[in-house]
Each structure stands twice: as C-alpha cells, then as structure tokens.
Length: 349
Image 1: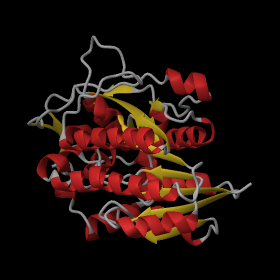
Image 2: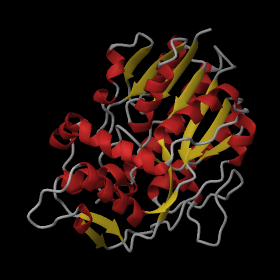
Image 3: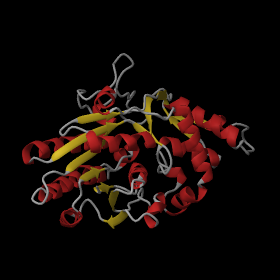
Image 4: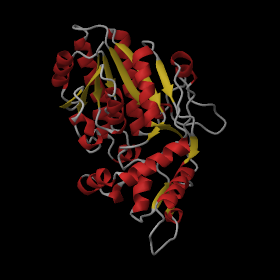
C-alpha cells in the first residue's frame, strides 16, 4: 500500500535526511515543499534526481492559497511540518522572520490542512518542534518530559512554542488529527554551517578561532539525525492522535566538551597544518555569552520508548566521528554554501 508524505522544509538539514530515509521504502511517496531559503539546498538531497518516489515544489509558507492547492492535489496521508527558522543567534538579531515563518507559516499550513479536511478527514498533521520551548534546566532538575511547562527563552523558542499551541488549538477546534514531537539538538550530515558542530569543524579546517559562549558549561542533549528520522517514521505509523512525543539522544554534553571532542577527532584524521598552533584545540576562544543563553536541555523519552518501542541507537562519540568524517569527505557541498550563500565569519554570530 502506498503511503504519501508531504514534508515542508524537506531540503533543510533534518528534512533532507528524513526525505532520503523515507524514500528508501518504495511504498512511500514523498512530496517536498521548500522555499529554498539560505538553509534549503537541493544538493542536500541528490536522490531527488534518481528516486522516482520523490517530487519537489518550490513553495513558501507565505503562499497560503498555493499550499492549499498543493495539498488538495497531492492528497497526502501524512503532512510532516518541519519548515522553520531555527538559529537562536539569528532570532536575537532578526526576530521578525521567525514570527513570519514559524508562527504565520504554521498558521498557513494549518489553514491549508483545514481546507484539506473537506477532502480527507483521516490524514495526520505532524508538527516537528524543539525541546527549547521548555526553557532550560538547572543541574538539580529532572529532564523535560511531555508534561513540562513551556518557558521559552529566545525569539526562536518563543516562535516554536507559539506554533505548538496553534497546532493543538486547530486540532481541538477543527478536528485535525495531529501529533507534536519535540526533539533535542540534532547533528549529522548535511547540517547547515551555522550550527555548533559543523561551524566548529569548518572553522578549525580554516584555521579560524573556535568561539565558545561564556565558559562553555551549557549542556545539550545530542540526537543523531538518523535516530530522529526513525523516530518520526514510527510516530507517523503508530503514534496516538493528539499526543506529544519527546525525542532525545541520551547524550548530555557540555558545549566545551563537544568542541574538544571535535578537535581530537580532527587531529587524528587530519593533523593541523598551521604556523600558529600544533593542535586544533588551541584555536578555542571563549567569548561573551549570548543573551538569555539556556543552561541545560535534557529529554526523558520514556513515553515514545514505552508506547512505540523507539530508542536512540547511534552512540554519540561514534556519531560525532562519522559526522566529522562526512564534512571532510564532502568538501564540495559545504564550500558551495560558504562561497555563495554564507560567510564563515558570520556563522554563530
């Protein structure tokens, strides 16, 4: 039986990995809806040219009427809404685009989904969100779970919290079958260079400073994108309507330790060639902390484990080594981004 997925943001980091993963099953059909803003990239999914079960529409979340027509014509079984602005630093500098994309864009998707109810009332609307909507934890607090209170700290997390609430409201008021997932920090191949792990890898390779906010003690739970994709598929097949599922990697590591690990892996794979230092870790530079920086994220994923049988499988140090190797082996992918779309000096600022 053919199962049809419509994936917004399907050419971004998580979206491209998810589209690749789902399209391996020839019984799945995938329609990607992506506006190809700075972080969307056709080169992140070369399979789009070779797999007959992937199609693509270049469409913005602002194009309300076009979204409705696309959904009505395609008739998906599952809408996976991943399209979002997601960089915290950028949200602090330029919050408006986060309101437009994450809140108004989600509203447009929900209204288009409401139109689709007239044709098909059994489809599933999956909203893929973040653990940052819950704010942060101190070291004495337990992990986030499905009952955690919302307490966002940045314009980014506030916009995602708003979109979560919209999805619940449209489900309750209009009868849209929905599921929300909140995940921890993802990492892996095809991640845009503004994010911590690729930023540090590419800065090190360019013999540039490796800037760490504050003292680097902020803790994040790291989830390999491969594990996240498997979780999303399981939720789409077995998840309970109206549920929220938290997806975590069970890898709580301080930012400074992440950077040190990257330096050690790089040093082993490609010893530094620099006149100013003999080890990548000597490029580390602690800089002024960013406003409202959350101290700690950690996820309790007992619910998805108990109900759906999912657990993360990629051990962090193995996953990080694989990720570093991927960036070393795929220089053409990230060089094009840095040369044409983004300057390395701007990353993480």
